[in-house]
Length: 53
Image (cartoon, rainbow, N blue to C red):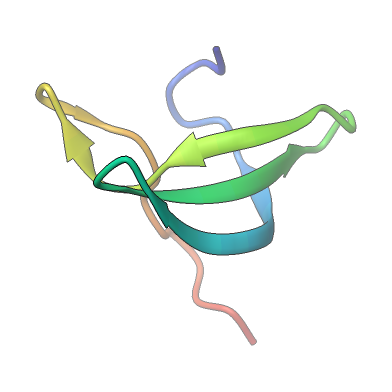
């Protein structure tokens, strides 16, 4: 689990599965994994802060 506000780079996706939108992300220190997009159970899971170039 990443702390709220952690910047990540989107590496792959979106993938629609299990009724959710998934993105493969990577942190600044090189950790990677899959994260859901949107609001689930009151928590925001991916929020775009800087538009892609």
